[in-house]
Length: 273
Image (cartoon, rainbow, N blue to C red; front, side):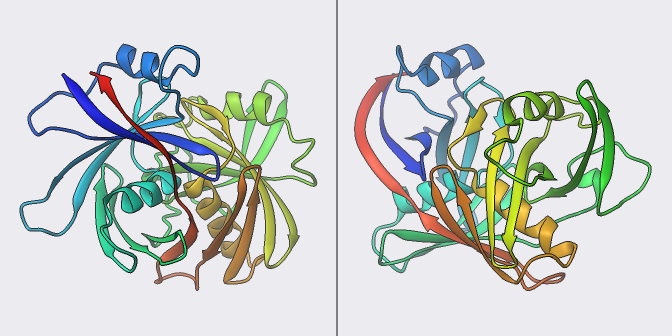
């Protein structure tokens, strides 16, 4: 079966986007890993399968598979790229439904896309995260010592570690260990956040099933949500990632968190699936 696809990225976090036929099983984890290979396949951080519009017309479904073949709940940069992929004209608003829930998107006229993630969920069971009680800071013992972090779901699970400098943060070591810690039964994305001031943070993210990426949309959302919940950040924050910057706004509890950033189409092709 040959299908057309688009290669897209959001700040270097890259995707293979395919309109997926109804009634056809998703590719096997082995096939996803083959396609994700940057030498032998298309190469991507995530594969996004775009399905049909829901029966009530409320939105379009899509599924997200990490480079290791595992399916995950939500992807912020991916949602922006799917919205851009589907939009017929600037200004179009689309609802996108993934296993992490339905989010609202708006394609702007300057190459940017705004995504509304809904209200961040700090309840441990929403991640899920096995801990006796909710807190704004948690401690876990790891091989390299005790780690202090915040935890939140923005449609997928995130742990946010505050550091003095993201340049020296042990992303590949600490991130890799925490991402698969037994306290997170479904794994967790791990962000390393450096606060420059109330309106600007720097961030690196180790994504479960992928490793460190150049940008993580939900990671940026989670970092701002954790900082806001502690009273450390303003309600409008610029998040600088290795691949570029995102704008994140969250007025606080009871309000949705919104994020604006680019979605870039690289090329189109056909692939045997």
